[in-house]
Length: 171
Image (cartoon, rainbow, N blue to C red; front, side, top):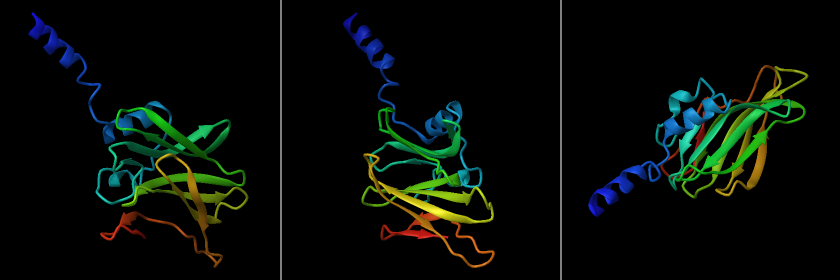
């Protein structure tokens, strides 16, 4: 009887010990009104590529997607630990820009780079790539906009890949 009880307790708690997955991230985003960037979802699960959903080096999960908060549209970033607990989140919805969520990548030292495209609300042709570096506690290290003022040129990342030496490369 004791063995049967031990087996039942073990199987009833097996989901508690399950690691968080990319599918968990995609499902959570959908259930919580977060839209993943359709052009970048093909990078989900590809090693060393930025994507809208990634598994972190410490077995956690990060999500970035389009979201509305307080009447403002922007990019929402969420970080879960390996136990599927929400640890922190950020909403990026600038006053003068429309912010489009793109992807996240983690470098070899544990910092995360959040990529977004910002469109000027007054001139939608005025776009720039916004890159935010955060640590695993969600503390913003820096926030930059990459821009060029030449005619018909807009800074934009098609994809982000981590090089073998651990440094980012952007295309």
